[in-house]
Each structure stands twice: as structure tokens, then as C-alpha cells.
Image (cartoon, rainbow, N blue to C red; front, side, top):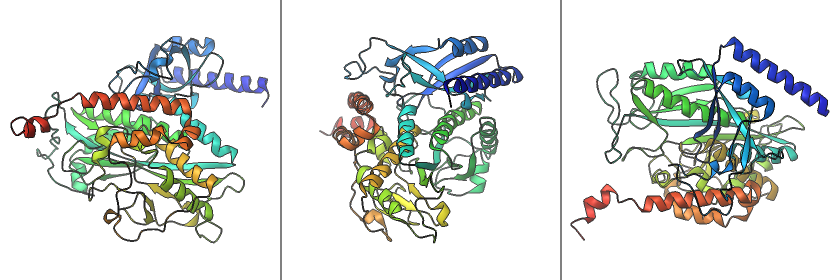
Length: 460
């Protein structure tokens, strides 16, 4: 496209957007973007102010927005952010405009990218990190297809963080206590809530595939349809927000915390992924006879080699590591296998054109943009370096050595010294991300837990 053609295309897109805003009688627009934690940040504007901001690029905020922990604490001693408050311009991605189903006033939300005044994108924005990986794949004439599976728990609203969570009371008047995995009646305890989730997802254009009751009490899993990595990350980002809003509507909480209930399985966000050749439009993981290709094995080799270094993107908080214990559904090492749910990288039974690798390490508490980006980055490194994987595991992988970081400080150390991930994901981004995770861990270390008061107060 020429410059004039691009401008004509942009003006036509803006015109369509304005028509959509008028047709839906939108009065406010929430301009949002994912921060480092994957939470929504941004600004709310009256619709006319929003339209004007697109014309004069006046929708701005300070780049220090990315220097915050999950609790909102600033990372003051940063090598990346100097807090001079350089402005970032919020550029709405017009394809992401959606009507918000939970607001009484007709309101829309739109996901924004963040750019500096010279037009360059912010290297610290998680959405841009994923875009960079997609661009690297495109340079190799490749594109990725992904499908996230998101698990979450329902819980009674809890105003005191010192008290353990309780499962909510269902329509039977009782609480779930044990596992009712795949239980239809168990899901139906909250069918009004799940019906609203489906309705909200339809309005937000989130492609929901299946819904099941998972292993934990009041734990639900919803799978999203496969597709473009950026679109699926956007959908996962919107999905988490929508589910929390539905739960609030019903007087309870929905949590994507990795391990909210002691003694029960954690919540994951498994990522199914495969690579398509843009030259042939064929699945790179399978040849014309349906056999596994060298690229299939190299992608697995990359995941096995680099996932331990990238663990902080799949398990970003202290609580995340409580998932990775034997016999708690989450893998504890980097083994792979066919139809084996004890390994990190499961190969589901599938025809050649849908051959894919399921990364079972990520928790539900991840930033979906960063989890998808880092999973693809590990596989891409495997393709580039032609890394051969270990032999597949047919038995119980829990019987094998725990070879992923067990605790957040271990993961933090590995990411800090990983030159390969720093190169492919961005040096500035990795520096800031590890600074934030160190700050969060330092804050955790200042908290005296109930366990310490229970077992140490009078016994040491």
C-alpha cells in the first residue's frame, strides 16, 4: 500500500467505527490496555472526546504505567523507567471495539497499543512483546495458531484476606466440598452464572469452545477456539475481565489466582499451539503423510530447553509455584509425550493438519500476552537452533525429576541470565519485568503469614 492508500484505509475504518458507535448509542468508551500483570489500565472518555482523540492523537499517559507491581506499587529504582513521565500515545486497535455487556450506560471498550511521539511502539507493553514474536515468525514465513484453556474458581466474597476462601453456595443451598470433575449437575449449580458468561462472551466476540467442571470444588474450565495469537490473547484478556464481572453480578467472586484453595488443584491456562508455513499454508508439524516433521521435534526441543528460563512468565507470583507439586494435575518437569497428561508438553491425538503441542505449564494467573509470546519464543528458538528433544515419556512423568524452578527466586535468577530470551523478547522488557518481580517478592517477604504464627509463635 502507498501512504495515501493507508490513510484512505484508516479514514474508512474510522468512519465505520463512528457509524458503529452511533448505531449502538455509545456514550462512553473505555480505552484499555494490559499492564505487566495483565490487568486492564487506561482511560474512560465521553464518546465525542474519544473520536477527537483519534483525530489529534491526544489520548496519552505516562510511560511509568508499566513500572507498577500487581498491587500498584512503583518500582522506583529502575534501570528502564526514569519517571521523567515521558508520554505514551494510546492508539486504539479499531478491530477490538466491543460493547460492554455489564454497564447500564451504553459503553464500549477498545484495546490500545502504546507508542512514543516518534511513532515507535513501547517495548515495555506486553501486547507489543507478543506482536514482536509474531513479526519474528513472519520474517521466517511462519504464523502461529494458538488456543488457550482457562481455569478459574468461584468463591464466596471475602473481605478479610487473613481468612481462607469458601466455595459459594449453589442453587441447591449447599457448598461443594470435594472433586466433581466433569460433573454436569455440579456446573448446573451455577447455570445462571455460566449462561451469563456465554452471553457476555458472545457480545464481546470471544470464541468459546467448551465448558466443563474441573477437578476442584467450584472450579470451571472454558476453552477458547483456536486462532491468531494476538486475537486469542485479546480474547483471554477480555474473558478474564468478563468472568469477574459476571461473578460480581451474582454476588460472588471469580478468581484466576493460581492456587486459591489449600489441598485442591490449582488453575492453569494451557496453551495449544502449532505453526503454519505461509508458503504452503500447511501445518509445519506434520508432513503430507501425517507424520511428525523435524520442525515438530525442534519446536518441542526449544520448549524443553528454554521453558525453565521463561518460567517467570508462566508462573509470575509466589502463589503460582504452589501448583507444581506431585499429583496435583500440574507438571513438575519438561518432559513431553503423546496423550500424556502428566507431562509439560502433551501431544493430543489429532490428524496431521491439526497436529499441535499443548503447553501445560502456564497458570491462570499469567498475563496471556506474555505467556503466549514466551511459549512461542521458546519454540521458535528451537526451530532456529534445530534443538532435538528428549525421547517422549509414556508413563507417569511425576516419577521423574522435578526440573523446572520450584520457587519464584529460582525462576527470577534464570530469566535474568538468559541471553537468548533477553534477545528475543527484548532486553529492556526483561530488565523491567525482573525488577517488578523482585519488588513483588520483596513485598511478600515482609508479610508474616498465619502458618508462621501458628507453628512458630510458641514452638521455637
